[in-house]
Amino acid sequence: MASQIIKVLNIVDSLLNIPRIGWIQRGVPRALAESVGEHTLLVSYITLILCNEIRRTGANVDASKCLSMALLHDAHEALIGNVGNSVRSMLTDWRDLEVRVFEDLGFNEELNNYFREYRYGLSIEGKLVSIADKLATYMRACKYAMAGYSTEELINNYKELVTRLTDDLPSDVREVIKELIAPISTWCVSKQSNNDKG
Image 1: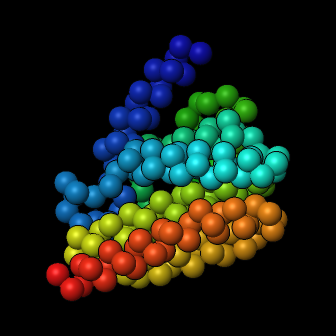
Image 2: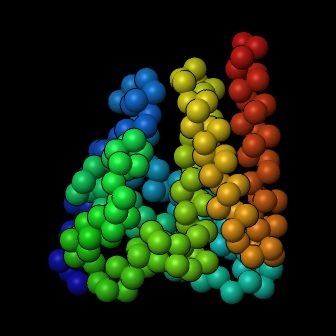
């Protein structure tokens, strides 16, 4: 147990120092580019809000499991770095590779199972964390666009991804998520419009 906690320090230190490559590729300076660790924190907060709101409807969602998955969802990048989507799309077994790398981090079997559930979308909690992950990237792309960086393609792609993932959920859960994320699109568009005028 103690050695696992010590390993976590190294994982967190690595994640806080790995920039997300998509931002670098779009001209965001390394000093301003969101790290994998910052992204993980944002995903965790979004997951917390989504899962708690869905639980209020009476849906059977395990918020603790959601948060565990959110905190772990990119932990494997401490070993392999943040790999761009263009490279990921070349590998048909990318998810399998991520699962194998995650297992090398030395977490217990329960956490390994959580990661598999998230990565393969095997549970409602895994699907919600996947939506939170895409929503976090969408929101960050909006912020970078407001700062003048070329992230419009990501904004469009991730907005579409969030919509597609949300549409695959049961109707009661889908409606809660749509209600929660609707103001985000309005915020993104209005901020971009204001930025274009300035």
